[in-house]
Image (cartoon, rainbow, N blue to C red; front, side, top):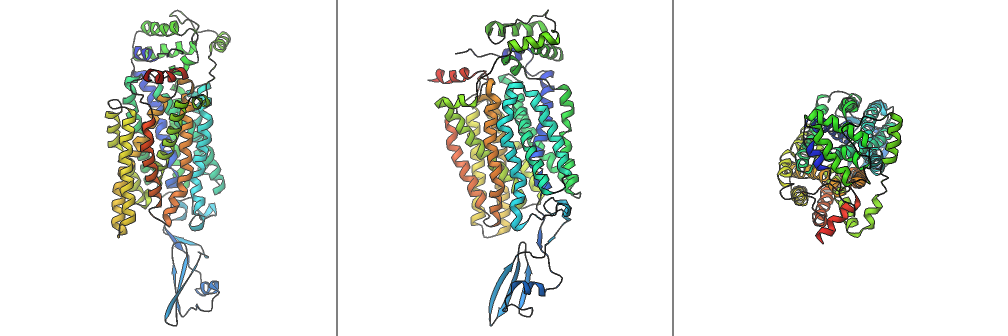
Length: 557
Protein backbone atom coordinates (compact mmCIF):
# COMPACT_ATOMS: atom_id res chain seq x y z
CA UNK A 1 0.00 0.00 0.00
CA UNK A 2 1.28 3.44 -0.83
CA UNK A 3 1.94 5.63 2.16
CA UNK A 4 -0.28 8.57 2.68
CA UNK A 5 1.20 11.85 1.43
CA UNK A 6 1.04 13.96 4.58
CA UNK A 7 0.29 17.45 3.25
CA UNK A 8 -1.06 18.81 6.54
CA UNK A 9 2.43 19.36 8.07
CA UNK A 10 3.33 21.52 5.07
CA UNK A 11 0.11 23.52 5.43
CA UNK A 12 0.84 23.95 9.15
CA UNK A 13 4.37 25.15 8.34
CA UNK A 14 2.69 27.84 6.24
CA UNK A 15 0.53 28.82 9.24
CA UNK A 16 -2.56 26.72 8.50
CA UNK A 17 -4.94 29.67 8.43
CA UNK A 18 -2.67 32.53 7.44
CA UNK A 19 -3.32 35.50 5.19
CA UNK A 20 -2.66 33.50 2.04
CA UNK A 21 -5.23 30.83 2.88
CA UNK A 22 -7.75 33.45 3.98
CA UNK A 23 -7.37 35.30 0.67
CA UNK A 24 -7.82 32.13 -1.38
CA UNK A 25 -10.78 31.08 0.75
CA UNK A 26 -12.44 34.49 0.44
CA UNK A 27 -12.18 34.36 -3.35
CA UNK A 28 -13.97 31.01 -3.28
CA UNK A 29 -16.67 32.24 -0.91
CA UNK A 30 -17.58 35.05 -3.28
CA UNK A 31 -18.43 32.31 -5.75
CA UNK A 32 -20.44 30.52 -3.04
CA UNK A 33 -22.83 33.48 -2.98
CA UNK A 34 -23.06 33.34 -6.77
CA UNK A 35 -23.81 29.60 -6.57
CA UNK A 36 -26.75 30.14 -4.22
CA UNK A 37 -28.22 33.01 -6.24
CA UNK A 38 -28.03 31.17 -9.57
CA UNK A 39 -29.72 28.00 -8.28
CA UNK A 40 -32.80 29.75 -6.91
CA UNK A 41 -33.03 32.76 -9.21
CA UNK A 42 -35.89 31.09 -11.11
CA UNK A 43 -38.03 31.20 -7.95
CA UNK A 44 -38.36 34.94 -8.61
CA UNK A 45 -37.64 35.25 -12.33
CA UNK A 46 -40.30 32.61 -13.04
CA UNK A 47 -42.56 33.34 -10.09
CA UNK A 48 -46.23 32.46 -10.25
CA UNK A 49 -48.36 35.63 -10.53
CA UNK A 50 -51.94 35.14 -9.23
CA UNK A 51 -54.44 34.99 -12.08
CA UNK A 52 -57.98 34.08 -13.10
CA UNK A 53 -59.59 33.31 -16.42
CA UNK A 54 -60.29 36.36 -18.54
CA UNK A 55 -63.86 37.32 -19.42
CA UNK A 56 -64.97 37.43 -23.06
CA UNK A 57 -66.24 40.66 -24.58
CA UNK A 58 -69.70 39.10 -24.72
CA UNK A 59 -70.96 36.64 -22.07
CA UNK A 60 -72.93 34.73 -24.69
CA UNK A 61 -69.61 33.44 -26.05
CA UNK A 62 -69.26 31.28 -22.92
CA UNK A 63 -72.74 29.80 -23.39
CA UNK A 64 -71.99 29.16 -27.05
CA UNK A 65 -68.75 27.37 -26.12
CA UNK A 66 -70.67 24.97 -23.83
CA UNK A 67 -72.78 23.78 -26.76
CA UNK A 68 -75.56 22.56 -24.45
CA UNK A 69 -79.13 23.85 -24.68
CA UNK A 70 -79.59 23.27 -20.96
CA UNK A 71 -77.40 26.29 -20.22
CA UNK A 72 -78.67 29.73 -21.21
CA UNK A 73 -77.72 33.25 -20.33
CA UNK A 74 -80.84 33.60 -18.20
CA UNK A 75 -80.45 30.50 -16.02
CA UNK A 76 -76.64 30.41 -15.64
CA UNK A 77 -74.12 32.03 -13.31
CA UNK A 78 -70.57 32.20 -14.66
CA UNK A 79 -67.50 32.14 -12.39
CA UNK A 80 -64.01 32.89 -13.67
CA UNK A 81 -61.67 30.76 -11.55
CA UNK A 82 -57.92 30.23 -11.59
CA UNK A 83 -57.77 27.64 -14.36
CA UNK A 84 -61.32 27.19 -15.58
CA UNK A 85 -64.58 28.94 -16.33
CA UNK A 86 -67.31 27.42 -14.15
CA UNK A 87 -70.92 27.66 -15.29
CA UNK A 88 -73.64 26.86 -12.77
CA UNK A 89 -77.24 26.59 -14.08
CA UNK A 90 -80.50 26.22 -12.17
CA UNK A 91 -82.50 23.70 -14.24
CA UNK A 92 -85.94 22.51 -13.07
CA UNK A 93 -85.12 22.97 -9.41
CA UNK A 94 -81.69 21.36 -9.44
CA UNK A 95 -78.19 22.64 -10.16
CA UNK A 96 -76.01 21.59 -13.04
CA UNK A 97 -72.36 22.58 -13.43
CA UNK A 98 -69.99 22.58 -16.36
CA UNK A 99 -66.41 23.73 -16.68
CA UNK A 100 -64.47 25.17 -19.57
CA UNK A 101 -60.76 25.94 -19.85
CA UNK A 102 -59.67 29.57 -19.91
CA UNK A 103 -60.69 30.05 -23.56
CA UNK A 104 -60.25 33.82 -23.51
CA UNK A 105 -56.86 34.06 -21.80
CA UNK A 106 -55.97 35.13 -18.27
CA UNK A 107 -56.13 38.22 -16.08
CA UNK A 108 -53.05 38.58 -13.87
CA UNK A 109 -53.07 40.49 -10.58
CA UNK A 110 -49.73 42.15 -11.39
CA UNK A 111 -47.88 43.30 -14.51
CA UNK A 112 -47.28 40.37 -16.83
CA UNK A 113 -43.65 41.30 -17.52
CA UNK A 114 -42.73 40.76 -13.86
CA UNK A 115 -42.35 37.04 -14.56
CA UNK A 116 -41.14 35.10 -17.54
CA UNK A 117 -44.14 32.76 -17.29
CA UNK A 118 -46.51 35.57 -18.26
CA UNK A 119 -44.35 38.03 -20.23
CA UNK A 120 -45.98 39.38 -23.41
CA UNK A 121 -42.80 38.92 -25.41
CA UNK A 122 -42.38 35.27 -24.46
CA UNK A 123 -45.77 34.71 -26.12
CA UNK A 124 -46.67 31.87 -23.78
CA UNK A 125 -48.56 31.94 -20.48
CA UNK A 126 -47.15 29.02 -18.50
CA UNK A 127 -50.06 28.45 -16.14
CA UNK A 128 -52.75 25.79 -15.60
CA UNK A 129 -52.34 23.02 -18.20
CA UNK A 130 -49.04 24.56 -19.31
CA UNK A 131 -47.63 24.66 -15.76
CA UNK A 132 -45.30 21.69 -16.40
CA UNK A 133 -43.45 23.91 -18.89
CA UNK A 134 -42.72 26.26 -16.00
CA UNK A 135 -41.28 23.33 -14.03
CA UNK A 136 -38.87 22.78 -16.93
CA UNK A 137 -37.19 26.07 -15.99
CA UNK A 138 -35.80 24.32 -12.91
CA UNK A 139 -35.62 20.75 -14.21
CA UNK A 140 -33.48 21.53 -17.26
CA UNK A 141 -31.11 23.51 -15.06
CA UNK A 142 -30.58 20.46 -12.88
CA UNK A 143 -30.32 18.17 -15.89
CA UNK A 144 -27.44 20.38 -16.96
CA UNK A 145 -25.99 20.04 -13.47
CA UNK A 146 -26.11 16.25 -13.75
CA UNK A 147 -24.05 16.42 -16.94
CA UNK A 148 -21.69 18.99 -15.47
CA UNK A 149 -21.23 17.07 -12.22
CA UNK A 150 -20.51 13.86 -14.14
CA UNK A 151 -17.93 15.39 -16.51
CA UNK A 152 -16.29 18.55 -15.17
CA UNK A 153 -14.82 16.95 -12.01
CA UNK A 154 -12.80 14.63 -14.24
CA UNK A 155 -11.39 17.69 -16.00
CA UNK A 156 -10.71 19.30 -12.63
CA UNK A 157 -8.87 16.26 -11.27
CA UNK A 158 -6.72 16.07 -14.41
CA UNK A 159 -6.10 19.74 -15.23
CA UNK A 160 -6.56 21.49 -11.90
CA UNK A 161 -9.21 23.08 -9.70
CA UNK A 162 -8.36 26.67 -10.67
CA UNK A 163 -9.01 26.59 -14.45
CA UNK A 164 -12.30 24.72 -14.09
CA UNK A 165 -13.40 27.03 -11.29
CA UNK A 166 -12.65 30.24 -13.18
CA UNK A 167 -13.98 29.13 -16.56
CA UNK A 168 -17.18 27.81 -14.95
CA UNK A 169 -17.72 31.05 -13.03
CA UNK A 170 -17.11 33.19 -16.12
CA UNK A 171 -19.58 31.09 -18.13
CA UNK A 172 -22.20 31.47 -15.37
CA UNK A 173 -21.82 35.25 -15.69
CA UNK A 174 -22.09 35.27 -19.50
CA UNK A 175 -25.01 32.84 -19.62
CA UNK A 176 -26.86 34.80 -16.95
CA UNK A 177 -26.65 37.90 -19.13
CA UNK A 178 -27.78 35.89 -22.16
CA UNK A 179 -30.80 34.60 -20.25
CA UNK A 180 -32.03 38.13 -19.63
CA UNK A 181 -32.13 38.77 -23.39
CA UNK A 182 -33.89 35.52 -24.32
CA UNK A 183 -36.32 36.22 -27.20
CA UNK A 184 -38.59 33.33 -26.16
CA UNK A 185 -39.01 30.69 -23.50
CA UNK A 186 -37.30 27.97 -25.56
CA UNK A 187 -34.08 29.97 -25.76
CA UNK A 188 -34.35 30.72 -22.04
CA UNK A 189 -34.59 26.98 -21.29
CA UNK A 190 -31.56 26.22 -23.46
CA UNK A 191 -29.54 28.88 -21.63
CA UNK A 192 -30.68 27.50 -18.26
CA UNK A 193 -29.57 24.03 -19.31
CA UNK A 194 -26.04 25.17 -20.19
CA UNK A 195 -25.93 27.31 -17.04
CA UNK A 196 -26.59 24.13 -15.06
CA UNK A 197 -23.61 22.40 -16.68
CA UNK A 198 -21.07 25.10 -15.81
CA UNK A 199 -22.73 25.77 -12.46
CA UNK A 200 -21.75 22.24 -11.40
CA UNK A 201 -18.13 23.00 -12.19
CA UNK A 202 -18.33 26.09 -9.98
CA UNK A 203 -20.07 24.32 -7.08
CA UNK A 204 -17.75 21.34 -6.96
CA UNK A 205 -14.45 23.18 -7.37
CA UNK A 206 -15.55 25.71 -4.75
CA UNK A 207 -16.11 22.86 -2.27
CA UNK A 208 -12.91 21.04 -3.21
CA UNK A 209 -10.66 24.11 -3.06
CA UNK A 210 -12.13 25.08 0.32
CA UNK A 211 -11.42 21.63 1.76
CA UNK A 212 -7.92 21.35 0.30
CA UNK A 213 -6.75 24.76 1.52
CA UNK A 214 -6.59 23.90 5.23
CA UNK A 215 -5.12 21.19 7.49
CA UNK A 216 -7.54 18.94 9.37
CA UNK A 217 -7.71 21.02 12.58
CA UNK A 218 -8.96 24.10 10.69
CA UNK A 219 -11.37 22.49 8.22
CA UNK A 220 -14.21 22.60 10.75
CA UNK A 221 -13.97 26.37 11.24
CA UNK A 222 -13.88 27.12 7.54
CA UNK A 223 -16.56 24.52 6.84
CA UNK A 224 -18.76 26.47 9.26
CA UNK A 225 -17.94 29.75 7.51
CA UNK A 226 -18.74 28.16 4.16
CA UNK A 227 -22.13 27.11 5.52
CA UNK A 228 -22.86 30.67 6.55
CA UNK A 229 -21.90 31.99 3.11
CA UNK A 230 -24.41 29.62 1.52
CA UNK A 231 -27.10 30.90 3.87
CA UNK A 232 -26.22 34.53 3.22
CA UNK A 233 -26.16 33.87 -0.51
CA UNK A 234 -29.87 33.07 -0.26
CA UNK A 235 -30.42 36.15 1.89
CA UNK A 236 -28.69 38.23 -0.80
CA UNK A 237 -31.00 36.65 -3.37
CA UNK A 238 -34.10 37.55 -1.35
CA UNK A 239 -32.84 41.11 -0.87
CA UNK A 240 -31.98 41.66 -4.53
CA UNK A 241 -35.29 40.14 -5.67
CA UNK A 242 -37.23 42.37 -3.29
CA UNK A 243 -35.35 45.52 -4.32
CA UNK A 244 -36.07 44.75 -8.00
CA UNK A 245 -39.63 43.52 -7.45
CA UNK A 246 -41.12 46.31 -9.58
CA UNK A 247 -38.75 45.73 -12.50
CA UNK A 248 -39.35 43.33 -15.38
CA UNK A 249 -37.97 39.81 -15.07
CA UNK A 250 -35.23 40.76 -17.55
CA UNK A 251 -33.83 43.47 -15.26
CA UNK A 252 -34.25 41.13 -12.30
CA UNK A 253 -32.24 38.45 -14.12
CA UNK A 254 -29.48 40.97 -14.87
CA UNK A 255 -29.45 42.17 -11.28
CA UNK A 256 -29.13 38.64 -9.90
CA UNK A 257 -26.42 37.80 -12.43
CA UNK A 258 -24.31 40.75 -11.23
CA UNK A 259 -23.15 38.77 -8.19
CA UNK A 260 -21.03 36.65 -10.57
CA UNK A 261 -18.80 39.66 -11.29
CA UNK A 262 -16.71 38.34 -8.38
CA UNK A 263 -15.00 36.14 -11.00
CA UNK A 264 -12.88 39.14 -12.01
CA UNK A 265 -10.73 39.38 -8.84
CA UNK A 266 -10.64 35.57 -8.64
CA UNK A 267 -9.13 35.38 -12.13
CA UNK A 268 -6.23 37.55 -10.94
CA UNK A 269 -5.62 36.22 -7.42
CA UNK A 270 -6.81 32.60 -7.15
CA UNK A 271 -4.07 29.92 -7.22
CA UNK A 272 -4.09 26.17 -7.76
CA UNK A 273 -4.30 24.15 -4.53
CA UNK A 274 -1.09 22.72 -3.08
CA UNK A 275 -2.68 19.30 -2.65
CA UNK A 276 -3.43 19.03 -6.37
CA UNK A 277 0.01 20.32 -7.33
CA UNK A 278 1.72 17.82 -5.02
CA UNK A 279 -0.23 14.76 -6.11
CA UNK A 280 0.48 15.68 -9.76
CA UNK A 281 4.17 16.36 -9.18
CA UNK A 282 4.13 19.99 -10.39
CA UNK A 283 7.35 20.88 -8.57
CA UNK A 284 8.02 24.32 -10.11
CA UNK A 285 4.43 25.43 -9.47
CA UNK A 286 4.68 24.13 -5.90
CA UNK A 287 7.83 26.21 -5.37
CA UNK A 288 6.16 29.40 -6.59
CA UNK A 289 3.06 28.81 -4.47
CA UNK A 290 5.09 28.04 -1.34
CA UNK A 291 7.19 31.18 -1.76
CA UNK A 292 4.11 33.32 -2.29
CA UNK A 293 2.27 31.81 0.68
CA UNK A 294 5.31 32.06 2.97
CA UNK A 295 5.77 35.71 2.03
CA UNK A 296 2.09 36.60 2.61
CA UNK A 297 1.88 34.64 5.87
CA UNK A 298 5.23 36.04 7.08
CA UNK A 299 6.66 32.63 7.95
CA UNK A 300 10.21 31.30 7.52
CA UNK A 301 10.59 30.21 3.90
CA UNK A 302 13.49 27.90 4.80
CA UNK A 303 11.34 25.97 7.28
CA UNK A 304 8.57 25.62 4.68
CA UNK A 305 10.99 24.32 2.06
CA UNK A 306 12.48 21.85 4.54
CA UNK A 307 9.02 20.52 5.31
CA UNK A 308 8.38 20.05 1.63
CA UNK A 309 11.75 18.34 1.32
CA UNK A 310 10.56 15.79 3.88
CA UNK A 311 7.57 15.03 1.66
CA UNK A 312 9.91 14.54 -1.31
CA UNK A 313 12.17 12.23 0.69
CA UNK A 314 9.25 9.98 1.60
CA UNK A 315 7.57 10.07 -1.83
CA UNK A 316 10.30 10.02 -4.45
CA UNK A 317 8.02 8.24 -6.92
CA UNK A 318 5.55 11.09 -6.68
CA UNK A 319 7.99 14.02 -6.52
CA UNK A 320 11.30 12.74 -7.94
CA UNK A 321 12.93 16.14 -8.47
CA UNK A 322 14.38 17.68 -5.32
CA UNK A 323 13.19 21.23 -4.56
CA UNK A 324 15.88 23.40 -2.96
CA UNK A 325 16.00 26.95 -1.70
CA UNK A 326 18.50 27.85 -4.40
CA UNK A 327 16.44 26.47 -7.28
CA UNK A 328 15.46 29.12 -9.79
CA UNK A 329 12.43 28.88 -12.04
CA UNK A 330 13.15 26.95 -15.20
CA UNK A 331 12.75 28.35 -18.64
CA UNK A 332 9.32 27.74 -20.18
CA UNK A 333 10.76 25.00 -22.39
CA UNK A 334 12.57 23.10 -19.70
CA UNK A 335 9.76 23.52 -17.21
CA UNK A 336 7.22 22.10 -19.62
CA UNK A 337 9.52 19.14 -20.31
CA UNK A 338 10.12 18.37 -16.64
CA UNK A 339 6.46 18.82 -15.73
CA UNK A 340 5.61 16.32 -18.44
CA UNK A 341 8.18 13.87 -17.07
CA UNK A 342 7.24 14.29 -13.42
CA UNK A 343 3.46 14.57 -13.59
CA UNK A 344 1.81 11.52 -12.07
CA UNK A 345 -0.44 9.61 -14.39
CA UNK A 346 -3.57 9.26 -12.29
CA UNK A 347 -5.46 6.18 -13.39
CA UNK A 348 -8.01 5.83 -10.60
CA UNK A 349 -11.62 6.30 -11.58
CA UNK A 350 -14.98 6.00 -9.91
CA UNK A 351 -15.14 2.42 -11.16
CA UNK A 352 -12.22 1.60 -8.84
CA UNK A 353 -14.36 2.51 -5.83
CA UNK A 354 -17.22 0.37 -7.04
CA UNK A 355 -14.92 -2.64 -7.45
CA UNK A 356 -14.32 -2.81 -3.70
CA UNK A 357 -17.47 -4.04 -1.93
CA UNK A 358 -17.18 -1.96 1.27
CA UNK A 359 -16.28 1.21 -0.59
CA UNK A 360 -19.01 0.61 -3.18
CA UNK A 361 -21.63 0.42 -0.42
CA UNK A 362 -20.40 3.71 1.04
CA UNK A 363 -20.50 5.39 -2.37
CA UNK A 364 -24.03 4.19 -3.19
CA UNK A 365 -25.33 5.23 0.24
CA UNK A 366 -23.74 8.65 -0.17
CA UNK A 367 -25.44 8.96 -3.57
CA UNK A 368 -28.85 8.32 -2.01
CA UNK A 369 -28.20 10.85 0.76
CA UNK A 370 -27.33 13.47 -1.84
CA UNK A 371 -30.50 12.59 -3.77
CA UNK A 372 -32.79 12.94 -0.74
CA UNK A 373 -31.12 16.08 0.62
CA UNK A 374 -31.36 17.78 -2.78
CA UNK A 375 -35.04 16.94 -3.13
CA UNK A 376 -35.86 18.13 0.40
CA UNK A 377 -33.86 21.37 0.15
CA UNK A 378 -35.29 22.33 -3.22
CA UNK A 379 -38.78 21.22 -2.23
CA UNK A 380 -38.83 23.55 0.77
CA UNK A 381 -37.58 26.58 -1.16
CA UNK A 382 -39.69 26.01 -4.28
CA UNK A 383 -42.78 25.61 -2.11
CA UNK A 384 -42.03 28.74 -0.05
CA UNK A 385 -44.61 30.90 -1.81
CA UNK A 386 -47.43 28.63 -0.57
CA UNK A 387 -46.62 29.36 3.09
CA UNK A 388 -48.33 31.87 5.37
CA UNK A 389 -46.46 35.12 4.64
CA UNK A 390 -45.63 36.84 1.35
CA UNK A 391 -43.21 35.46 -1.25
CA UNK A 392 -40.19 37.55 -0.27
CA UNK A 393 -40.69 37.23 3.49
CA UNK A 394 -41.16 33.46 3.23
CA UNK A 395 -37.98 33.03 1.23
CA UNK A 396 -36.01 35.34 3.53
CA UNK A 397 -37.17 33.57 6.70
CA UNK A 398 -36.47 30.11 5.31
CA UNK A 399 -33.05 31.35 4.13
CA UNK A 400 -32.02 32.97 7.43
CA UNK A 401 -33.45 30.38 9.84
CA UNK A 402 -30.65 27.80 9.21
CA UNK A 403 -28.09 30.06 10.90
CA UNK A 404 -28.68 28.47 14.35
CA UNK A 405 -28.17 24.99 12.90
CA UNK A 406 -24.77 26.18 11.70
CA UNK A 407 -23.80 26.35 15.38
CA UNK A 408 -24.87 22.70 15.76
CA UNK A 409 -22.59 21.83 12.85
CA UNK A 410 -19.67 23.81 14.28
CA UNK A 411 -19.72 22.33 17.78
CA UNK A 412 -20.67 18.78 16.82
CA UNK A 413 -18.72 17.99 13.66
CA UNK A 414 -15.33 17.54 15.39
CA UNK A 415 -16.49 16.64 18.88
CA UNK A 416 -19.00 13.96 17.90
CA UNK A 417 -18.01 13.33 14.29
CA UNK A 418 -19.41 13.92 10.83
CA UNK A 419 -21.80 10.96 10.91
CA UNK A 420 -23.39 11.88 14.24
CA UNK A 421 -23.78 15.49 13.11
CA UNK A 422 -25.47 14.33 9.92
CA UNK A 423 -27.86 12.11 11.89
CA UNK A 424 -28.77 14.91 14.31
CA UNK A 425 -29.52 17.31 11.46
CA UNK A 426 -31.64 14.70 9.69
CA UNK A 427 -33.67 14.17 12.89
CA UNK A 428 -34.45 17.91 12.92
CA UNK A 429 -35.34 17.85 9.23
CA UNK A 430 -37.49 14.74 9.42
CA UNK A 431 -39.39 16.05 12.44
CA UNK A 432 -40.08 19.41 10.79
CA UNK A 433 -41.26 17.83 7.55
CA UNK A 434 -43.41 15.20 9.28
CA UNK A 435 -45.25 17.69 11.48
CA UNK A 436 -45.71 20.22 8.65
CA UNK A 437 -47.17 17.46 6.45
CA UNK A 438 -49.43 16.15 9.22
CA UNK A 439 -50.79 19.66 9.75
CA UNK A 440 -51.59 19.92 6.05
CA UNK A 441 -53.45 16.60 6.13
CA UNK A 442 -55.45 16.94 9.34
CA UNK A 443 -56.01 20.68 9.83
CA UNK A 444 -59.56 21.93 9.27
CA UNK A 445 -58.51 25.58 8.83
CA UNK A 446 -56.44 26.57 5.83
CA UNK A 447 -55.19 29.71 7.59
CA UNK A 448 -54.00 27.88 10.71
CA UNK A 449 -52.55 25.09 8.59
CA UNK A 450 -50.51 27.58 6.58
CA UNK A 451 -49.11 29.21 9.74
CA UNK A 452 -48.26 25.92 11.45
CA UNK A 453 -46.84 24.48 8.25
CA UNK A 454 -44.65 27.57 7.85
CA UNK A 455 -43.25 27.21 11.39
CA UNK A 456 -42.35 23.54 11.03
CA UNK A 457 -41.10 23.99 7.48
CA UNK A 458 -38.58 26.41 8.98
CA UNK A 459 -37.30 23.57 11.19
CA UNK A 460 -36.99 21.43 8.09
CA UNK A 461 -35.13 24.23 6.29
CA UNK A 462 -32.85 24.71 9.29
CA UNK A 463 -31.82 21.07 9.25
CA UNK A 464 -31.58 20.45 5.52
CA UNK A 465 -29.48 23.54 4.78
CA UNK A 466 -26.83 22.37 7.22
CA UNK A 467 -27.14 18.80 5.92
CA UNK A 468 -26.20 20.08 2.48
CA UNK A 469 -23.29 22.01 3.99
CA UNK A 470 -22.17 18.97 6.00
CA UNK A 471 -22.26 16.82 2.86
CA UNK A 472 -19.97 19.26 1.05
CA UNK A 473 -17.67 19.04 4.06
CA UNK A 474 -17.98 15.27 4.64
CA UNK A 475 -18.07 13.85 1.10
CA UNK A 476 -14.63 15.11 -0.08
CA UNK A 477 -13.07 13.53 3.01
CA UNK A 478 -14.29 10.09 1.89
CA UNK A 479 -12.47 10.16 -1.47
CA UNK A 480 -8.72 10.26 -2.25
CA UNK A 481 -7.16 13.32 -3.86
CA UNK A 482 -6.67 11.40 -7.13
CA UNK A 483 -10.45 11.10 -7.46
CA UNK A 484 -11.89 13.51 -4.90
CA UNK A 485 -13.59 15.73 -7.43
CA UNK A 486 -14.91 12.67 -9.28
CA UNK A 487 -16.35 11.26 -6.07
CA UNK A 488 -17.89 14.56 -5.05
CA UNK A 489 -19.05 15.16 -8.62
CA UNK A 490 -20.81 11.80 -8.92
CA UNK A 491 -22.58 12.38 -5.61
CA UNK A 492 -23.65 15.86 -6.67
CA UNK A 493 -24.79 14.50 -10.04
CA UNK A 494 -27.13 12.05 -8.29
CA UNK A 495 -28.37 14.91 -6.11
CA UNK A 496 -29.17 16.92 -9.22
CA UNK A 497 -31.44 14.10 -10.41
CA UNK A 498 -33.58 15.06 -7.43
CA UNK A 499 -33.54 18.62 -8.74
CA UNK A 500 -34.94 17.40 -12.06
CA UNK A 501 -37.83 15.57 -10.39
CA UNK A 502 -38.79 17.90 -7.53
CA UNK A 503 -40.40 20.73 -9.58
CA UNK A 504 -42.96 18.23 -10.89
CA UNK A 505 -43.53 16.83 -7.39
CA UNK A 506 -44.26 20.37 -6.17
CA UNK A 507 -46.88 20.69 -8.92
CA UNK A 508 -48.77 17.83 -7.24
CA UNK A 509 -49.64 20.27 -4.46
CA UNK A 510 -52.12 21.97 -6.80
CA UNK A 511 -54.33 18.88 -6.48
CA UNK A 512 -53.12 17.25 -3.23
CA UNK A 513 -51.56 19.84 -0.92
CA UNK A 514 -49.82 17.33 1.33
CA UNK A 515 -48.44 14.96 -1.35
CA UNK A 516 -44.97 16.59 -1.69
CA UNK A 517 -44.56 16.57 2.09
CA UNK A 518 -45.30 12.84 2.35
CA UNK A 519 -42.77 11.99 -0.37
CA UNK A 520 -40.03 14.15 1.13
CA UNK A 521 -40.65 12.89 4.68
CA UNK A 522 -40.36 9.28 3.47
CA UNK A 523 -37.04 10.12 1.78
CA UNK A 524 -35.74 11.66 5.02
CA UNK A 525 -36.69 8.59 7.10
CA UNK A 526 -34.93 6.20 4.71
CA UNK A 527 -31.83 8.39 4.77
CA UNK A 528 -31.71 8.35 8.57
CA UNK A 529 -31.41 4.58 8.44
CA UNK A 530 -28.75 4.51 5.72
CA UNK A 531 -26.41 7.03 7.41
CA UNK A 532 -25.31 4.29 9.81
CA UNK A 533 -23.40 2.55 7.00
CA UNK A 534 -20.95 5.43 6.40
CA UNK A 535 -17.43 5.63 7.91
CA UNK A 536 -16.35 8.34 10.33
CA UNK A 537 -13.69 10.68 8.91
CA UNK A 538 -13.14 12.84 12.00
CA UNK A 539 -9.47 13.55 12.67
CA UNK A 540 -8.18 11.69 9.62
CA UNK A 541 -5.73 13.08 7.10
CA UNK A 542 -7.39 13.50 3.72
CA UNK A 543 -6.61 10.32 1.73
CA UNK A 544 -4.34 10.96 -1.24
CA UNK A 545 -4.74 7.60 -3.02
CA UNK A 546 -7.20 4.74 -3.21
CA UNK A 547 -4.80 2.60 -1.19
CA UNK A 548 -4.93 5.15 1.63
CA UNK A 549 -8.70 4.81 1.69
CA UNK A 550 -8.55 1.02 1.75
CA UNK A 551 -6.15 1.34 4.67
CA UNK A 552 -8.92 2.87 6.80
CA UNK A 553 -10.78 -0.43 6.72
CA UNK A 554 -7.67 -2.58 7.20
CA UNK A 555 -6.94 -0.64 10.39
CA UNK A 556 -10.47 -1.10 11.76
CA UNK A 557 -10.80 -4.78 10.78
